[in-house]
Every structure is written in C-alpha cells, then in structure tokens.
Length: 405
Image (cartoon, rainbow, N blue to C red; front, side, top):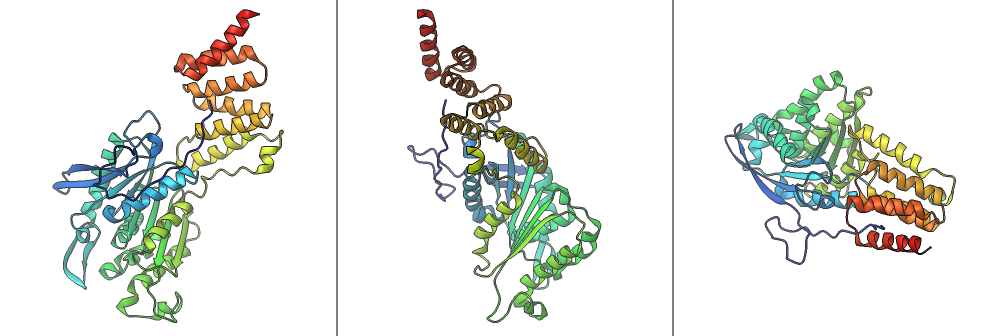
C-alpha cells in the first residue's frame, strides 16, 4: 500500500486556545505536577509529536525529549521547529516539555547578585525538582527514550550552563541562548575554570548562542577589553567559550555562534533552530539521484549503515521510518529496479514485522513482477495482521484468477 509524505501546517496558537472541531492540530496541553521538593504545584506544557497523533499512546513509538525553560515564551517556537525538522528528516520526532515558572529569578539563579541583592536564588532546589520529579514523571507517563535536551535563554541559559558543569549526565545535549553568565559575579564562569579541565564530555553536545548587544565599532574581540556592566553578558560568554576551547581532549560536540543581526529577544528563535540542526547533524539521510538511478547500488545497505550510526549517537536503536522506506520501495518499482525494491520492502518487514502495510507493499511488488504465488502469500499475511479493504480486493482477484484456470 502506498503511503506518501504529507506536509504539516502548524500555527503558533495560544496554549489555552482549544482546537477547532475541523482541525486536529494543537500545540500541546498542560499538566500540573505536585512537587514535594518545591512544596507547591508546578505546571508544564507538553507536546507529543504529530507522528504519534499528539497523544500519550506508547505503542506507536518512543521519542527523545526536549526540556525548555521559560516555557511560556519558548514552547511554541521549539514545537514548530521540531515538527518542521522531523518532517524534513533533520531530527527525530520529539516530545517538548515547556517548564513554567512562578518566579523565574528564583528558579533560574543560585546565590545572590550585587545588582539584585534582595533576590535569593533557588536554582539548586529547582533543578532537584527537574531531575527527581519532573523527568521521572514524564518518563513514566509519556512515550520517551533516554535522549534528553535542555534549552534555556538568558537566565535559563545560565541554568543550562550550570547544569552542564555540575550535572552533565542529566541531559545529552545543552542549548544556551544568550546566557546571563554575569550573574553572581560570574560564578558559573569561575566554576568552569576548575571543572572543565577535569571532565570528559564524550557523547554530549553544547551549543552557545550570543546576541549582538555591542555599540557601533565594537566587535567580539575589542569588547573583551571593556569593563562596563553593559557588556558583562557577552564578555562572560566569550570568557566561558575561551576556557571551554582550551580543553581540546574533552570530546565535547561543541559550537558557538555570534548573531550579528539579532538582539537578546530575537536570538531565541534562530538560536533554537541552529542549535537543533547542530545537535542532530548526524541524523539527516542523504541519498543522491545517482544512487537511485544505479540498479546495482544497495540502498538497503546504505540505510542500515546510516541508522546504525544514528543509533550510536542517540544511545539506543533507531530504525528507519516505515513510510520513508515504503516510498523508496515504490520509487524503485516505478524504475523497474525490482531487486532494489524487494530489498527495501524486506528491510521494512524486518523492522516492522507487525505492519500489515509492509506485507501489502511487497505483495504489490510480486504482483508487478509477475510472481502471483508470492503476491498471494504476502496479501494473506497482511490480512492476518489487519483488515485492509484494498488488500482484500487484490487477494480476492488473484484467487479468482487462480480458480478460473
């Protein structure tokens, strides 16, 4: 049975807006978690990939999770980016958890700062809630995998960097967007000088975005000589990056980028997109036209090798999408490359042994190739797994032809 790619249209809907009756697309939904650590109820916004129908059903697949600080500002953009990227096969479909804050200054800082002497940070307690209550709750109630990404902007970026330094194994990848590393007399930067030389970050990714807050004629080199508070944020980020770059053997997958044409608010969207493109730079499957045209090129071997590497990066087995392989199989059928098509359909069956569609598809191949006995066998197998009217009709026609002979 042919299945085709479809395009998804997403609107940045207000979270509280209910989906219209004629539209199945919603951004996400809200959950309330009772936190013993914080001694209060905390709210999160959750998006399940459209690939999973936007619901909690676990038998359709499991997904990596992105935890986003300042969820009320960042949730919708991250959802839109991940859905676009997964549709384009640039990253896996992902669950997005937007963390809401009652008081972000308390949640996202530790200690105090001379510029805000009356604010006492509760960052360590907040991250204990994230680690010991929120993440286990999401893993228990949603179809998750072990791969987790942590995204934060401004003070959220500070929290991301603090977690990267002090609890690096909590997440697989970290995204810091214009982080307030000046906070508390640059404590995070000072901590990094001691911690970074001792750590090995194999399997970890870190992306740092910096916005342009510079005066005319000032660049990222000359600003480092400045001592004013106005440049404290970018100078602290540049200092952190310099210290990080000194440790060449830490095996960290790392990139930083200065956004000359973006300011503190606008860097969020472009930074989130670039960060996810960087983190999942291994995910995209590239197939050249020459490989499709060459009847001797083994597409199935290419797919097996690619997804083996993806699995190594993700830390668990990742199989190629059934629809992608199915479409490639039909494409090879259309080019009369029947051996390539058969190998692809067989790969799909091996990866999805309970999928009626996979057996129906290889049945179509055998029918096209004139092997009616194998087509009958495949259609019968498909119908034993699921009643598909189209398959039933094809089988009945073949059996009728066989009987009439």
